[in-house]
Structure formats: C-alpha cells, structure tokens
Image 1: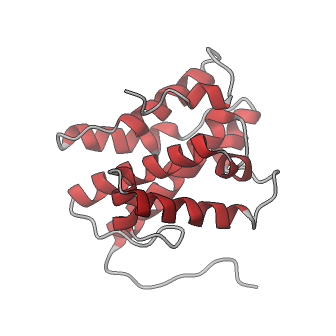
Image 2: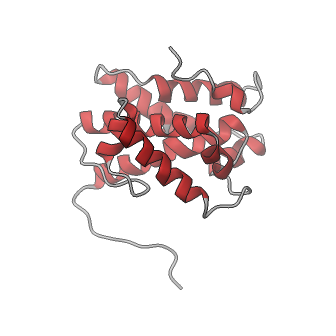
Length: 173
C-alpha cells in the first residue's frame, strides 16, 4: 500500500520553502488560538492572519532566490499580492481557504495545535522563527511571522492561554 508520493525535482529549496510557507500559515494559528484549521478558516481575523503569514513567508523565500510552488492551489504571486493589499488577490486567497474548510471537520488540528493541547514544545522556532531569522539576515522585516512566533512561545511558557484574542494584535501597527 502506498503511503505518499514522490517525484524528481531540481527545485529542492523552492519546494521546501513552499512547504514551510504552508506550515507557517496553518500550524501556529492553531497553536496560538487553541482551535482547529476549520474554525480558524471560518473566522475572518484568523483567515486573514493565515494569508498574511503565508504572503510574508513567500516574499522572504522569493527574496532569497527560491522558485516557489503553488500552495493550496494559490500561486506565490497571489499570496504576495494579497499580503501587499491587492483586494482581488486577497479575496481569491480567502475563497481558497474557505473552500478547503469545507473538506475538514472541526476536530482537524495541525500538529503544532496538538502539541499545545498536550502541553508539549512546538517546532515554532523551525517554522515561523526561521522565516523571521532569514528575513533579518537579508534586511527584511517579518512582523507576522515574528509576531505569531512570540505568541506561541508565550503559550509554551504558560504566560498566556491559547485563544483567538492572543493573535488579534499581530499585524496591527
């Protein structure tokens, strides 16, 4: 029985960064809010946060010279445009997330959300933390990725509880 697929690629770093972008938009939002992906996609605030996290991570990947792949059926350029304020691109990204939400149950929870539920450490430093570090190294800012990483670290330390309110300030400058 097959478990997963495999393919030959000459774009290893582009594919890896694309997967990182997906994980950055899904995992920490679940961990920080205490909710599954379905509930977060249904909420306009956390849906926007996911799009902004992905768009920011895509911009940083492109700035490093990576050739990025489609993510959730969204072209990297769509996510960047949505991040940068293009209302049509943002609407397309939202529609794709809402469409995906129809295929998941309320119980679906990304691994980082499960880690928080079980009181364990998360991989936040290896997802959004890496995006923020790379941004700094190349002279860019990553307020969304560094912001969500800070929230998840506070939850890990027991300073705050997971909730949608814990992430409401991210990106509000």
